[in-house]
Length: 430
Image 1 (cartoon, rainbow, N blue to C red):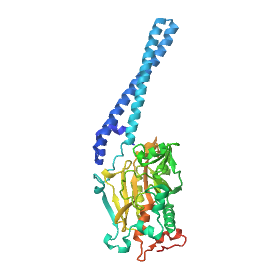
Image 2: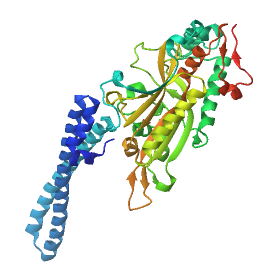
Image 3: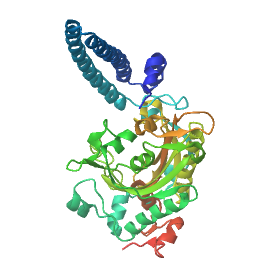
Image 4: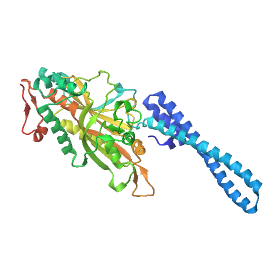
């Protein structure tokens, strides 16, 4: 969340930065949060004055009792009850206002980086690099959508997945499942040089999802197990962020680098039929995530490193790709700066986002209370966090199946995956 001191000390500059998100409602929320914060501080001052007066009266009463001043004692005791009632009332109101401030700050998004391009929505995102042939250069046999290829080869069974779990679930079979599993191991191995592998729980607490920004704003997009008050993770980013929650790290140990393979669960409640065919948008999918806790100074270089890692991964799989810088009006709730890697799927005739690399500045770490102790100086500072999709299976799988379809209907498995496919090099046509 935003540092409330920004609202107290430089509200207009904070509003100017937030205005780059091009949502006027956010500026109203900032004004409301600032007004509520001022109200809370006024109430706290009144509460403290009342407590101070009660303590003073208590000392006066003790002296008067020793002096035998009964009437004066009675008058002060009456005043103490009145002031005590006032203190309790004001304290309760201050706590209620503080809760309103916190709830509002939890819903207000992060401030965009100065380096994020200005824009009002997806059409203003900036293509930084393209490593792809002209879309018209693909052969006709590559222009078959993966859901048709998968059905023909018996490697994607959407009908039975729907029978088992409902719409927007998928089931991979045979070499389709083998290739999916191989992709995850391939991604983990590519980043094992610099990241500690973690296998976190797939169900997490409300505090864990709140720390990353999914809650309270995006509760409708998450799967909630109400009986246990646990949430199915939408991405490994959620549990990885909370590995260091409420901890103080030493600067010398930063950046803390973690990676994880997990299933991910998303309701996709806002998709409304958009890009829902085949593997393009699913309620459950597998993904390898890379994550870091850093100092503010380390974060920009880490962002570029994460982008380079994601780019090199799709390049190793032989996929056409491009790098897209997300504009201020399209940034996610927690994002300070965000860069997507997209691959081209010739059968779907679409660029597909397969990796989102994001720098959250101190937004998540403040929510999660992740601090570090600088090697020079005193005290502690709020850390920064970053994450990136090292490899999200569904859309990469779709792009491989479409790009690598051969004239005879078979699909060539990328050479980078051969060490993990038990000798298979091709998914043969039936």
